[in-house]
Figure: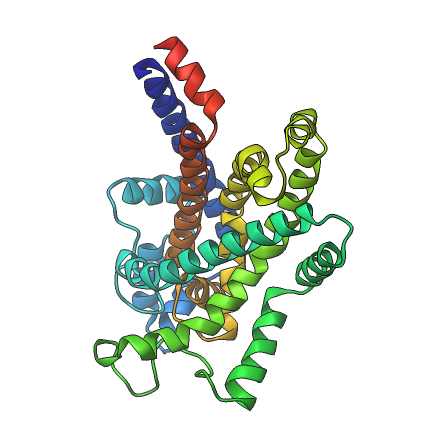
Length: 329
């Protein structure tokens, strides 16, 4: 058991290091090759002397060879220095910490709601194969898959915020209100629509996949044998099908971290939610290279952690993994 854990940690650590090096290098090269002038972004059309511009060019590395700039930036990142944001004029790490906490609550709640709702829909549709319930669930999922997340967000915004007025139009806190003075109910009311929108994005894949796995499991030999012994209904699903469906469903759900983060970029933009997704859009439009590179690195870590958690949960869900571990021990 100890040997398996050691090998697992070593392999994952190597994969993480290789991933982060590759993401950092390719991201820096792509952004450096883009037509972005950090000096003009920093000055924002302010008039400066030639000597001052020369100093800024030296500070931002304008005209410096790509390899030198890449080496200097990687050295700073290894020291925990992600640079200074051109938009906020504060260290990038402070911006990331502030914005990521707002996005984490939105992403976590949407991921959990979408996964549970999609799993339940898939089980119900698979158990009632070819019935009106199955057709309704599949139609619902096909509509969700074909509809962009920003379109769903705008539709919910128009109906429940503009016409009905049940929820605020956007932002994380009410206008002209300090975040320290916001009540829990005001905070939740601004979270409901973005959370529903983002959770709906992840419902369709998990529901359709779970439905197919349930249908496949119900047609297997061991389920037919269980039916011959008198098992039926939900007890049959729980004993013979749920465990086999749960493992691939969890795999798919954790692998959806990348899609969840990309969906959050659009959803936060629609609802003007002050999270990491909206900050990424602002950094891209304003050519804030240090902030944009930091967000790319954070998103890579976010996706890697999701896959890592899925691998760890395999041991507790799949009994075959436990048996192999006990045998080796």
